Image (cartoon, rainbow, N blue to C red; front, side):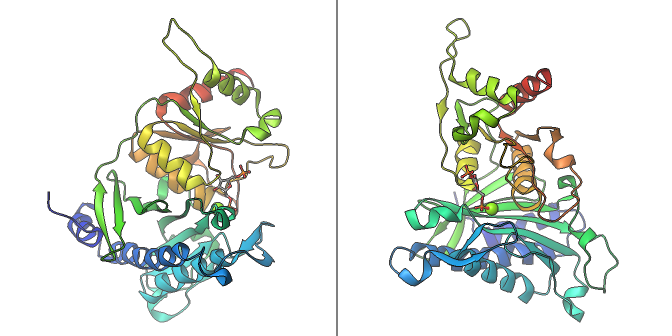
Length: 336
Ligand code: AHM
Ligand code: MG
């Protein structure tokens, strides 16, 4: 098979995107560029002491910011603004959205929401981390600065979404609503190649991923599901599932997408609305899993249906193989 680069793939599939005028391709290309720079920096983290560790500040959500969080944030935002193809960006690391308020960017149709470096508390211990992004069409009138309403859209309105995993290799996985494709970075020549075309997740899996330290505070339905995961049923040929939790959303999601499984971050006493953020963590991964044949829900329904009220809104989150998510939903409904 001919080696297809992500650049060639984007150009070749652009015609399948309704109303595409090349701008979306340029956004994906900006994300690709920033991800290479970030990947390079992450790989040096063990060698360059000045790039690991906390900055000493917290983001708006009270989380300690790592030096690489801020580095990645700057690289993605700079790459996205430079192409003149988006009018604004919202990031986990910034309290408010950023309007690229100039003549060229104000004419652009799209906004991007991004978690530049998710799972960054894992950087110092050499565990996989990731970037998650979501792309929407602006709703407000063009040629004016973007408004908050341009960002507060339900997951169903996404035009594209994806993630980059900085793992044993760096991969870019994205969807524009026509299936999911994965590209692996070849650091020798600095190019992403199509390695996982048309990704589909198994309907059922045998992996569950959850921070079981919080078990006592979970919804009764979730507790029952975890009990089910651990149980054995000879008649149904069910063995206990494997528990796998990295604590790095992109890495846990990526493994489960390929092998089949479910990732859960239920509401807890400490995080009554869940911990993860709807707009730049949950909704983009929900778009991807649905495109791969899986499902994503919160404790009250489908993730892609939620209309956000604020930029950094949190939600409970259950995502993965469709049969597994269905069972969780049934158990939660029966325990109301
Ligand atoms: P972050 O955006 O501050 O990195 O937090 C998100 C991370 C996810 O990657 C991960 O799945 C989760 O938080 C782990 O949380 P916990 O340590 O509570 O299990
Ligand atoms: Mg995050």
